[in-house]
Image (cartoon, rainbow, N blue to C red; front, side, top):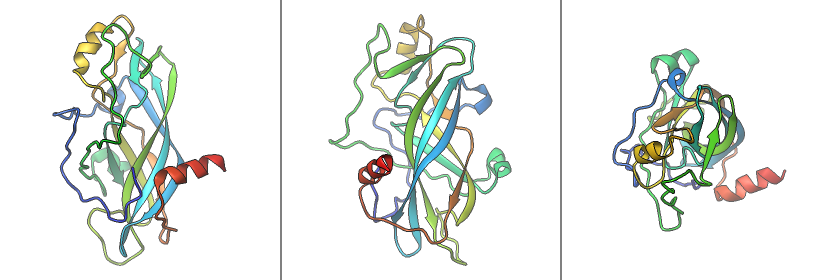
Length: 224
């Protein structure tokens, strides 16, 4: 994800590795709990009215089932979606302030995952026994507006909000169902869409916006 001078328009989802998007499971029905923690925030210039909020998240995935599960380490990297509501109650009933469709595509610079070994999960996956936890990271983005009496479509206002992500659990070439079958002796392959637990985020009214590459920001943050 790059710090952009233009805000991405709300456009239809297009996936390179998938032609159909799986419906998200209800959180209580998921094989995993996915608990996010905010570890970094950055504000990128958009225009005179709106700006991008880049969120670096650490997510703890815990197997809460009775069988071992097989999880992609890069869960959510193929695509994710963002939902933001003003309150937890609004989130639960589907009253969203922000829920864009994002166009996902890959360039020549992106390293696409290799097709897995049909016999067993490789180093791109982790096997979690019941109760075992895996920690991953993902960068997310929302569009916010500066303090103003006006409302700008496709953005959220300054103040407290509740964020939830839906993460793709499969990004490799090939049908996930084929590997789920051949890997059954190792555990149940996590596929479809995983919802994170809600996370409160706060948007400042007068953020310090930047115009530098994301990688530079996160590297400098990690060293501090």
